[in-house]
Length: 165
Image 1 (cartoon, rainbow, N blue to C red):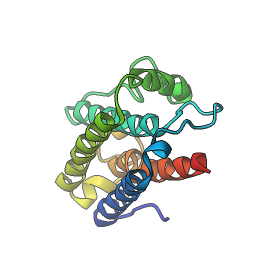
Image 2 (cartoon, rainbow, N blue to C red; image 1 turned 120 degrees about the horizontal axis):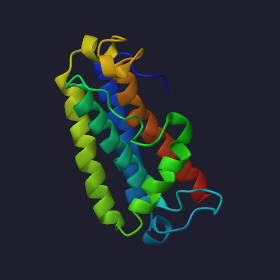
Image 3 (tube, one colour; image 1 turned 90 degrees about the vertical axis):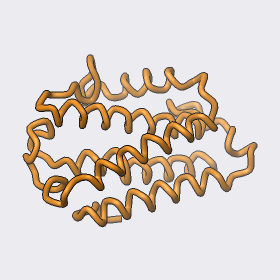
Image 4 (tube, helix red, strand yellow; image 1 turned 180 degrees about the vertical axis):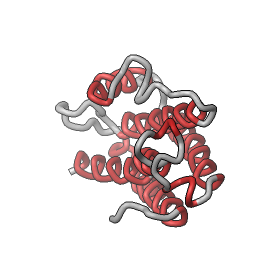
C-alpha cells in the first residue's frame, strides 16, 4: 500500500489498518488469541504486539508534546538511540507482561484516538512539509505519524497472521 501523501490519506489509511488489525484479532477464537508465537520472536503473543503498538503511540505522543514546546525530545526514548531500538523493545515487552489483553486493547484505543486528534488538528502543510518543526529534523511530522500508525498497524497485522500459520 502506498505511503500516505495527504492528511485525508493518512487519516484513512491509519483508520483502515487499525480497524483491519483489530477486526482480525477480534475474529479469532479465544485459544488462537492466547496462542504463543514461535520462540524466535520477542513478542510472543497478540497482547505483546498490541502493547508494543500502544507504547510506540505513547512515545510518539511524548515526542510531539515535548517537540511542540520547542524542546528536543529524547528519541526514541531516554537512554536509547535508533540503533538500540531492539533493546528498547525488550524493555517495552517486559513492561506489559502483567497487563491483560482486554486492558491493552483499551490502552491502544485511547492512544490511537490521541494520535488521530493530532493528525486532525494539523493542516496538510503542517503534517507533510519537511523541516516544518525543529524537533522532526529533516523529515515531516507526517513521517513520524505514519510510522507510529498506519505502517505499524500493517506490520502488526502481517506479523500476527504469519505467526498464526
